[in-house]
Amino acid sequence: MGPAAPAAGRAGGRPRPGGRVAARRRDGRGVRAVAARRPAPAEGPLERALARFGHEAFRPGQREALEALMSGRDVLTVLPTGAGKSLIFQLAAELLEGPVVVVSPLIALMRDQIDSLEEVGVEAARIDSSRGDRVRRREAARLASGEVRIAYCTPEQLEDDAMAEALAGARPALLAVDEAHALSHWGRSFRPAFLGVGAAAERLGRPPILALTATAGPWVREDIVDTLRMRDPATIVRGIDRPELRLEVTRVERVVDELRAIGRLLVGDPGDPGAPAPLEGKGIVYTRTTRAARETARWLRDRGVAADYYHGRRSARDRERVQEAFDRGEVRVVVATNAFGLGVDVPDVRFVIHRHAPGDLEAYWQEAGRAGRDGAPARCVLVYRPAALGQAAFMGGTPVVTREDVAALAEALAGDGGGRSQRALAEAAGMSAGRVARAVELLEDTGLVARRRGRVRAAGPIDPAAVPLVDEARREAYEESRIDVMRAYCETDGCRREFVLNFFGEELAERCGNCDNDDRPPDPAEATEAPPGIVVGAAVRHPAFGRGTVQHVGDGAITVMFDDEGYRSLSAELVAEEGLLRPE
Figure (cartoon, helix red, strand yellow):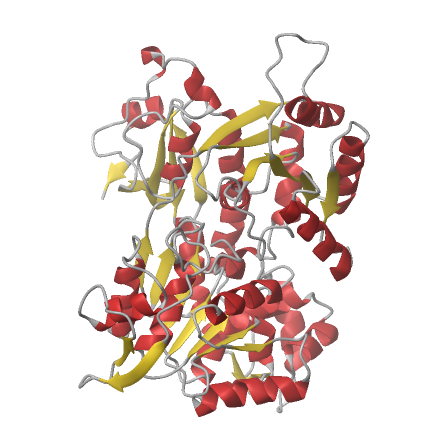
């Protein structure tokens, strides 16, 4: 989801003002219906609520998600940027019996969505670390009294016992988790509080859970469901494709060539009359490190490009200054780490360049998708240096719990019947907060520890040798394989858009004609012949790797996401000759 575009509006932007509520009533089913001053476009409570927010029709996936929530089901939605994800829980707040608690990763994202709601006369509470205890308590009280129907909070607020109790007292009818891919990508690294959201749902009375994201492949979807402890969720995946984005990869072999490639893209090559014209408009250059962001911005400024850099270690004032200058067009290029994106809504970004390949395709598609939000053509260019991918895997990996970790945690809990907070456990066990959060999650699932009022205690003796670590082995296999998928995208000779869509479980009827590989006509000799039944999305079984799902067929290979082994690329010829994949 575009962090500052709250899904309302005809094109996924800010909602139109208008349609203020004149009266509210409850129908016989207890559904909270809304009567608007202007005539509703259709009869049902969903349409009346939609008109309340200034819309005439639902976008793909919105109605299905709302209907599932209204029936009491958990829902996982994967909808593209600007497709109206946040409108789902905003409408739910009008339709459900109780209020909605929204867990959001960034304060800036919450502020923008609240500002958008105010434009249509809807107030919302905001509970985060930037506000004092008194203000936070007051905001929770507003939710409990019914003064507001939506409360936004960061995941860390749900770890606070008093705040969790206050929110539970409001009897929420829905817990919405925005940017839910952060559970998987961030929760086990630098935002361990995300891992506690599933447990927090129980403390809130276990309302239905709505998880929303713009990018989540099959593995991350499964991880979101498991981490949030969702129950038989309705999974709604719509419109991963962004046809306005042109996809390109530029391969280089040396570090110095990375900057030269970016220079050719942004300022051209005066020494080569046949060189293509430089990119026009403003855009983003993503780097892996803060040092590379500073270096690249300085290099571009030296060549006459209005550039600045953005990363999480800069002061809040500097980050805000860079973002505002970019919005106004005073800065043409922002060179940034992945800290730039969530909470930033700039519709007219004409290009996104990656100096370094991210560690997985989901992260790449999330960042590349920040171009062309206005629907106009935009270019996404990845500068690919093969030797750099190993570093991406190392920096992007999430901790995997070992038996040594379990032993350290067991020792820290021994003899402490009252339990400890996760922060105290991390200090006592000498482990990172992310690793402790994952270990506690694992031990809680097996019944060996229990959490109550923010404290973790052992439910009995913990024998590290007896703790099952099968899921951790699966996670390790996935972590190791995701970089192979990123490498395969960079090196494919086939249609890049088809590769991306296949990864997310969608098919493309024909070559897109809008990627660098599609600039050349297809060679029939390069076509990949797969055995009958081996198509994208098919469930298959391999004699060694077990069960999996076909993700991509092309480049002479068949890529399968195996349940226990992660992504594997198999020779299509060998699969056919030896019958290595059997449809299930």
